[in-house]
Amino acid sequence: MILLSCPSTGSSAKASSVLDKNMKLYGPTNALDLDNASTSWYSIGNEGGSGTFFIVRFHRRVYIRELRVQFQGGFAGEKCIVSTATTTTSGGLSPSCWTELGHLELEPEDTNEVQSFDLTEGKGDDDNHLCCTDVKIGFDDFTDFYERIIVYTLEVLGNEDSNES
Image (tube, rainbow, N blue to C red; front, side):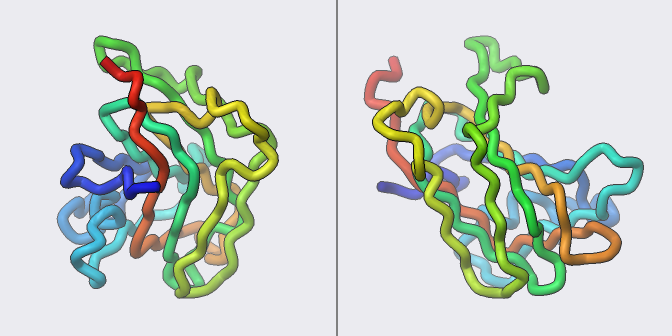
């Protein structure tokens, strides 16, 4: 397995919100930056009920296998839904094309430690659901009363799609 979500391989990040709209200090790409331990993605919370989410865009087809995330204690997601999508050749992606990974619900702990989640658990030998160009982590429950999330690091590990042309 290799790190797929590294910006140096062309991956990027998008999120539902960023504190004070300050992308430099709190933007989602900061969570992918493993070289700087002091950076993070900081959401503003679920104001307006639109949902809090984090998307990693690989800009290529990959097979995802594992998710590693480090929250700030007190600002963690208690229930996370992982979904995948594949962009069209024109790069288009609509919200309706997200496919949840079965009934895979992650239940992170409210801790500062890096937590690992096996995305293949209970999936058998069928890799089709794990092949994607984008992965979305939706946060449904929160440890923070105001539904804010702070992620120091987010890593997606897996394999490159060797069939990609």
